[in-house]
Length: 124
Image (tube, rainbow, N blue to C red; front, side):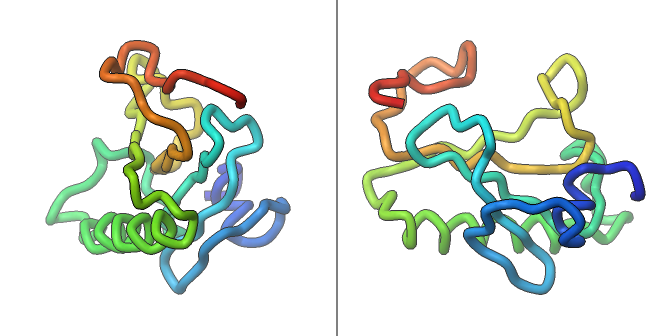
């Protein structure tokens, strides 16, 4: 998709602080971190949102690759005590970029509530 900022990042047209990349997944640090570790994990192939994942589309394997990458990244970032993975879907769900992406948040003890979505921000 030509006007998608995450497609442009995946294509190398917009710089990012890459922390992981393979043939189907790119992960980079969020420019507005909400936790000490805040990494965005995206499929390189454009998928608009989690609402567009289906067996018929053939994109389920791309999502599985994202979660395999998340596990690797969490280990490499030292998040053995735990982390949170969030994806927003659609306008009402808070999705601001229409390209499927997962927020990997860690480095701080998360609260029990998902209201407001963000962890308690000590020292961030």
